[in-house]
Length: 102
Image (cartoon, rainbow, N blue to C red; front, side, top):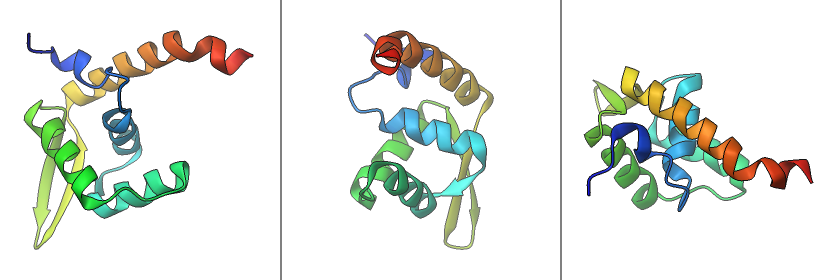
């Protein structure tokens, strides 16, 4: 069964898609910038082999778009990506509210 776009990043197995969408909601970024930001939050920078497949999946789901400038690709949210992030935030809060409030 194929997931709907709004459900795509609500999958809490990895949280990587959620983090990428969240970071891109702040500003457009290229892959290394995304990895650096995740590294600041997590304590270790994810490898290109982790980041780029996730970006590819998000792009294929129409949640992000890319803009090429020379060799640099900058990613930003699509309207569907903004809606998916909103849904993911709600799911995150429902899932973890008691963890945060303890």
